[in-house]
Image (cartoon, rainbow, N blue to C red; front, side):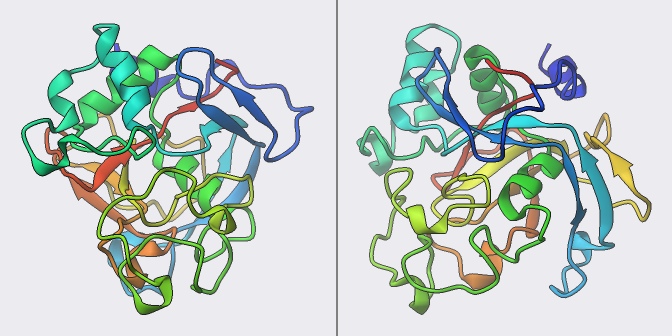
Amino acid sequence: MIETAIQQATAMPVTEALEAGETMIRTMDGMTLVYVPAGLFMMGSEDSGDRDEMPVHQVTLDAFWMDQTEVTQSQYRMCVAAGQCAASALFENTDWDAPAPQQPVVGVTWFDAADYCQWAGGRLPTEAEWEYAARGPEGYTYPWGNDLHTGVVNCYESVCQYEYDAATPVGSFPEGASWVGALDMAGNVWEWVADWAYPYPSTPVTNPTGPDTGQYRVKRGGDFYNSEDYMRSTYREGVEPAEYSYVLGFRCASAQSP
């Protein structure tokens, strides 16, 4: 069922009259969603030196909604209480057992994240959707622009004024918002996306969802213990879908109003 939902990521398009960054509240969990209008952008980077970010290629996307922040501990517990999410994903047998309710949920596998999004009425964003919501049609290096400076991200870098040694409550860095108002798309915790990891194509694509099978799922965004390079919106890594970590969470997306 989850795989089917991923493949149908572009079914039932949202209303085109909306403007970039408009918001709505998802009834199931109270999450604020931001509207990402249809458009095209150049995905990837030729400047980073990372081969898996090459080649840069044109991507065209239908409009969609994206969670404004990472899913929180309190929101995830709602899904657990409803019997639709695995309680073990809360990492309850570690020192991370008692985070603040508004901190991002961590310790979740790709399957846990996909289950939550399905319960909430959405799905995991595709890798292309995630990058587009982060850097926009202008192709910024970071969600907020092309320069890393203080007050925009929770990361391990002198310019980040690193002081937390942990994930911060979601939305703690409003100055780091992306072009549609999505928050924490750099730093704080990594985020699962829907796609299997794969080499980028060299030709233009429309609404890509990645291959049908693979070994690794993609994570995006970096975490609070990563340096500047990981904060770039084009940076990508593959992870076994059954893995989990205290620095790996997620957010959801939807091709229609939930």
